[in-house]
Amino acid sequence: MTSIERRTQALVAEAFGAPPELLPLLPAILADFSALGGWPDKVCTILRECAPLPQEAAVVDLGCGKGAAALALAAELGCRVTGLDLFEPFLADAASAAQGAGVDHLCSFEAADIRDRPEGIEAFDVAILCAVGASVYGDYTDCMIQMRRWTRPNGYIVISDGFLKRAGPPLTTTFPGYEYYEPHDETRRQLTAQGDVIVREILISDEEFAAQRRQDLRSLRGQVQRLSHIHPQHREPLKAFLTSQEREYAFLEAHTTEAIWLLQRAPDQRA
Image (cartoon, rainbow, N blue to C red):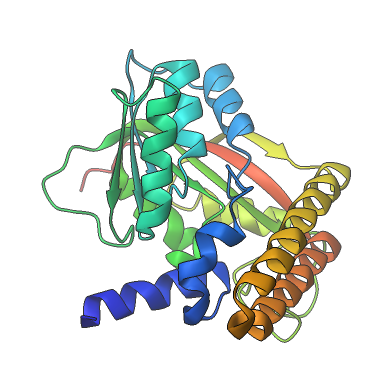
């Protein structure tokens, strides 16, 4: 295995909170998840209702996973979507799903580190970051600086992430990985620090999140139980992974609110 492959595996494992030895099992663990979070149907709705896009608008889906948002945008809005992700098994799932949905002519999926924007590519009409976490870039201010690099002036940025329900002490010791979360007002301030405008905000209700959480955990428990019988040598890591996911969902439900933000990118200021 090359150093690049090892780095890629480490990044993927960190993103999913899974030990590296479980990466070969990750597609099976998440087999029931066509969407890996991010509320793709709501992303499609917010763009359809609030963003006047050109015909066959060019969209980049950063950290696209299995391509749920890409497929929805291609099928419902006729967008041309480029999906980027590090985990090639999910990219294969995305390509297969696009073909099955008859939108493969509108979708392309590539293995790439979304922190490295290639030089020389055209900026997109829309850049999407769903359920990846702004922490891939830093805090929300850092995230918007990077999202702007993918987006043409006056184009649109969609971020599906979250914020703290209430102000309080840092939550690092409670659940690491969400250090960048701030209360609602501060989150909005960071999102607009570059002069971009929040066109619309959708807040996910506690009831809707709890219902999705129950469905997700039911699926995870079933797959972990099944895979523990098939791969007994991985029983303990699988059990630990499930426990970690249960803790994370409980933390998010208790302390955070999920949201989807649609922002319009401001033109660059001239010197």
